[in-house]
Length: 124
Image (cartoon, rainbow, N blue to C red; front, side):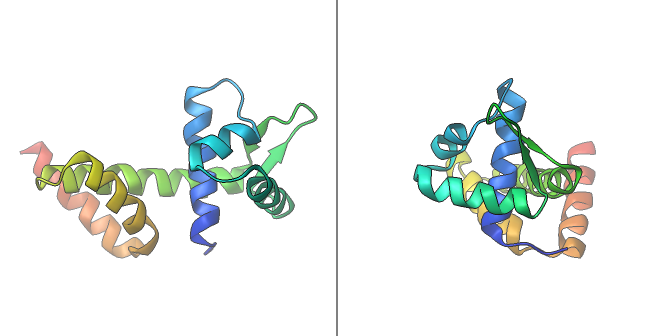
């Protein structure tokens, strides 16, 4: 299943926020992504309609199983790619920024190969 990069970014942000906050609300997503409230509101509505997230009566946002699968995949890619770049001598700031770009573009096959290579290197 392929979704837009922006949807992946939203889902990853909700996953990240859910790890550090008891409840995730739209304003948290606004601040995390640095976007406007109206833009985030519209996008969250679309994610809800496409069954990637649930929003309860208190405005708390949770990932559905479908949304969690995508968010977890993107989060893993971000973490591994940034770690690989840092291990190659790239500054943390640049590595995190570049990983955000790469996580959307790299194929599953290439990412799995890179991940296996990276873990072999750190096991040495």
